[in-house]
Each structure stands twice: as C-alpha cells, then as structure tokens.
Image (cartoon, rainbow, N blue to C red; front, side, top):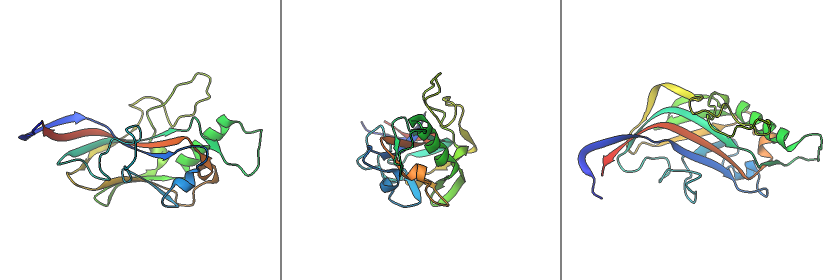
Length: 202
C-alpha cells in the first residue's frame, strides 16, 4: 500500500526489547556481550516478537519519529535458577527469585540515550514495571505494582527523530552481583518505552 505524501498519523505504540537468557544451561553473565552492561534496542536480530518489536537495531523504521513518555523495566524471573557454589536447602526457589530481582534493580543503573546524549540516568529501581502477575499467595515477585500507570513517567516527552540512534543501557557500576550473574534461564528482562509513534499514512 502506497503512503500518502504529507500526511502523518500518531498512535500509541510501546517500543520494547528484551535481554534473554535461554535455558538453565546458560548463565546471565555469559549471555552479556559486555561484562558490565546490558544494552537494549541494539541487538534485535534473531529475536521473536516476544523479545522485541523493533525492526532494525537502534533506529525507528522509515521516517518515523517517537515521543517517549515513560520507561519501564519488566522482569520475568518466574523460572530462573541460581547457580550456587553449594546447595543451601534453607533458601527456597522463591527466595532465590526475590534475591535476584532485588540485586538486579538495586545494583544497576539504567540510562536512555538518544543520539549519544543521555536523556535520563538513574538506578533501575526508578523504573517499576507496571506489569506482572498478581498472586495472593505471594510466590510471584514482581518489580512494582502490576498496573500500567504505576511506572516512571517523564515530565516532558523524550523525542526520537527519524533515523536517530537510540538505546537503553543497564549498567553495573561496581560489578554484576553473584546472585544476578549466576542466574540461569529461562529469564527475560524487557525495557519498554511507552509513548506515541508518528508515521506516514498508508
């Protein structure tokens, strides 16, 4: 279908990308390409639609632009296992998952970069997921309330211009905690930019 010259449409469309530890034979730190940083929206090849909805690494398709209004970090740690040097049966799998999540969000810094300019850079606990599973038994640990409004919202939208590079980085300024680095999959960590995409009308 041909595009209509001069006409644009604006729609609410979150952009997301995931860091994926495939299975219990793979560790978090061996999946990292950089020993201290996990990058999102950069490596999008060979990912399914569950892991990303970006078509090309670090840029929007065609002449599209984007207004980011919120940023979330969503963690699916429901099936991960922790590689421990000794088996400590006093620590339950649920406690392992809770320890993983707290070590991840309290020992990392998340940054949004647009055109190599840092737009925001704060500890990861600033970006609750606003998503997840509610379990009355308390066996599922999430990063924040499972409510899309319970997220960090920018006071002014962050604009990504057409063909402008962007990415999100989760860095570990000290080192990757052993509770995080030793985690085995399956595990997904999504970064979600929530906002409005402006594109050509077709």
